[in-house]
Length: 481
Image 1: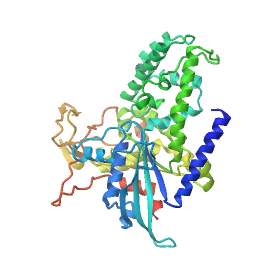
Image 2: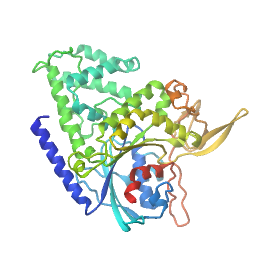
Image 3: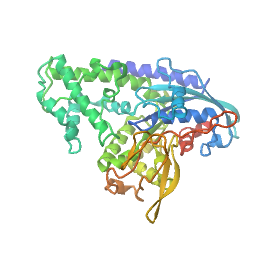
Image 4: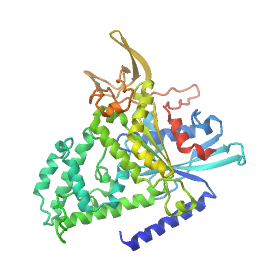
C-alpha cells in the first residue's frame, strides 16, 4: 500500500470512528465479534445468545440477568446496510423444529439486539439501553490478516516449507508434483488455474485431516462466496529461488500481482470495514477435536490461536484510540462442545485451553486488555448418566446421535438415545501435549440438538446450555453496570 493510500485509509477509518463515537452519545452500542475456526460452533453460539437475551432467560452467572435488571431485549433493524443479516429465525427453526445443527458460517453477517436494562444503584441509576451488534464471521478470515505484512515471495517460501513437514507432506504430495511442472518464467491463464486448483486441493486435504482444527491462509480459498473464479482468488505459492527478483511479465509476477490483489480487495476491506471496529471478541475453539487428533494437531491449534491474538489490535480504549486505532479490550476463548464430556472434566478442558493460549494471553494482557477462557456448550445436546462396564461405573453422557454416526461397531439411526462414555481428560493439561491420549481414543459422536418440551400454553422451553451465562458476563457484564 502506498503512503498516500495508507494515509487516506487511516483518515477514512478515523472519520468513521468519529461518527461512531458521536453516535454513542445518542445510542450506546457495543460490537461483539463472534468467530472461530472450522466446525467450532459459531452459528450455534450466536443463535443461542440471541435466544436467551430475547426470551428473558434467567442467566445466573450474568449478573444483570440474575439481578433482574434486564427489562427487555428485542431484535432491531440491521445497523449496516451492506452486511447480510444473521438469519436468526432460520437457525432457530433448524435447532428447534428440525433438530439439526445450522449450516456453518461461510460469510460475514450481523444482527442487532436492543437491550433495555436498569443501571445498578450508585451515581448512575434508572433505565438505560444498549445496542448490541453481533458480528459473526469465519475465523479463517481472521488469520488472513497476517498476509497484510507479508510479501508474495516470503509467503510462498513459508507456505511451501510448512507443507514439507512430516505431518503435512502426505496431504501436500499431489500439490508438490504440480509445483515441479510450473514454469515461473511463463505467463499463462490456464497455468494459473492449474496451480491454484492444486493448492486449493492441498488446503482442502489439510482441513479434512488431523489438522482440521487449524488453517493455512488464504481463508477465502475454501469459502469464496461471490468471489469464486475471480483472479484475486486464482493464485498459488511458487518455489522461487531465494533472493532472486521476480522478472516482470513472468508467471511469478502474475502470481505476485494476484496475491497483492487478494490483500487489496479481500483482506484490507474486511479489516477496515469490520474487524477494527470490534469492541469485544469471542473465539470459539473445538479443543476436544484437537485433543482427539493428537499432539501434532494441538501444536497446530496453539500456533493458530497465537496468530489469532496477534491479529487483534488489543488494549484499553481511550477517546483517541477509538478515533485513530480502535481496539478490542476483551477477548474470550471458549472451548465448545463441553456437553460431549462429563461435568467433572469441564475444568480440565478449560485448563487445556488456558495452556493453549497462555503465551499469547500474557502479551495481550500486557497491552491492557483482558483475556479469558471458558468451557461451554451453547446448546446442550446431552444429559449426564452412568454406565456399567464390568465392575466399573463410568461417568457418561446420553443423547441422540445423528443418523450414520458410529461408535465402535454401532451405527446410529438418528432417533435412538445412546449413553456413551467419551473418555476422560488427564488431570494435568500438559499431559495431552505429551501424548497421554492416543489419537482417536475419544468417543465423540455428533449428537442432535435436544428435543424441547412445550407447556400447556404452547410455549417451547428455553434451550439448555453450559456456561453461556459466564461467557456473557465476561464479554458484556461491565456494560450493564
